Amino acid sequence: MLSSGSDTPQLYAAREPIFPRRVKGKFRNLKWIIMAVTLGIYYLTPWIRWDRGAYLPDQAVLVDLANRRFFFFMIEIWPHEFYFIAGLLIMAGLGLFLFTSALGRVWCGYTCPQTVWTDLFILVERWIEGDRNARLRLHRQKKWDFRKWRLRITKWITWVLIAVATGGAWVFYFADAPTLLVNLVTLNAHPVAYTTIAILTATTFVFGGLMREQVCIYMCPWPRIQAAMMDEDTITVGYRDWRGEPRGKHRKGEGAENLGDCIDCMACVNVCPVGIDIRDGQQMECITCALCIDACDDVMERIGKPRGLVDYLSLADEQAEREGQAAKPIWRHVLRPRTILYTSLWSIVGIALVFALFLRSEIDMTVSPVRNPTFVTLSDGTIRNIYDVRLRNKHGEAREFRMSLTSPDVLRIQLEGTERLVVTVPPDSTTLQRVYISARPGSAPVASDRTELRLWVEDLASTDRAYRDTVFNGKGTP
Image (cartoon, rainbow, N blue to C red; front, side, top):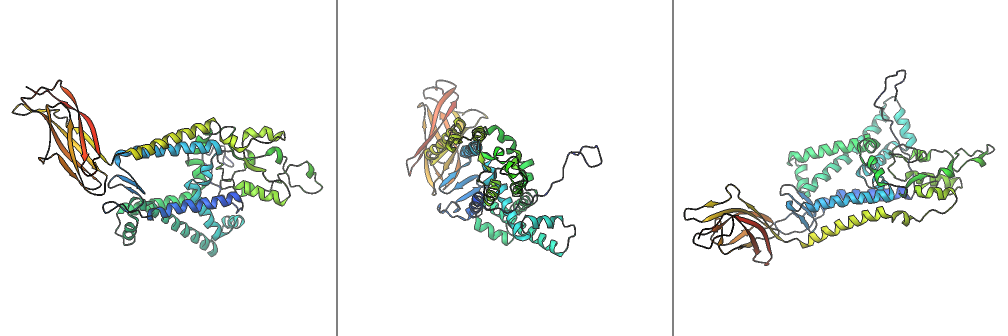
């Protein structure tokens, strides 16, 4: 872009504010429903209670950073089970690929947090300042009189309150919500909580209220990635130019019979939240929100033309429609090799996670041999190896775990601090136990310098068992 009166190229173009016009229709109603549902889930989920007993938090969804655990209703994810989180992230990515390949940027248009909060901020702006024309007049008004200050300050205060609620809801996912709320109000909460709320308040205000479409166009990488997910069978928002062109005002006596159905009313442009003209074809900025469909259908009904001039369609159907033939049914666009592949991969990961969830044991252990030194020789000739064993009790009450050894008879096991082979592990926690395994003198020698062995732990209350394989270093002596 060149600046006026100068040959010096400008690398930055100032933002032209966009003031979308109000529109009614099935897609706008769908977006209202999705906004209400998603915001309701976000704001209300931390307040759902779930009884887990006396030793666990009663919050249904909680990211417990202090104890490095994640709670989701009846599911509890421990630090060593992070593969569940990785699996869910893989499923989310595959799901995004699936929806994009089938329906374009449907995620961006309906459920992306940036879209949802921007819709909410625009709704507030429309309530306070009026619809598109009123907001345009206010924006172009150079003089900041009392009315303009009043409207802007009212809007900004409302945006800040929404942003504070957004940041506040987020921190409630990381601590007991009722307790944290009391601490926040009484100014007794940790500074990290206030800092997090302040950062999220600022980013929500700026992204949803001031930057809006610029986040989608310049900051989000997905517009640049989506092309790899889409093909000619992808259903996305498009303009039937073979029906709408040449466009014109359809005035009587001016050759309206030679014009297409598009009357060049700019309704589709005026309702677009990113300010593009869908009639120019597919563009990177388009978030597939379908508001232009509602606007165009309303105009077509009023002038007595068929709906669907702007509609969900695919490039594969363009030639057929140009020739007056029927387009392929939607299911043939959705069910094709690419979407079937994504669905299969998504299902495989999901099934694997479900199996892993239900097959995991309520007790667990890790074994870490002490490597420095790998073994010691006692004064009586005994060869001793030392192991740090971490026992994990996932039950809501204390349990006694008995340890045992599967190995050649020459090896014996001993626990530090007790003559018994039983360890009491507190409820829903871990205990680090030092274990000594020895090859006593006078017994049969161990066959090699490294002997395979298996450590077992048994829950004496439920008889559940778990084991870990390890090695014994050094040879016994006869």
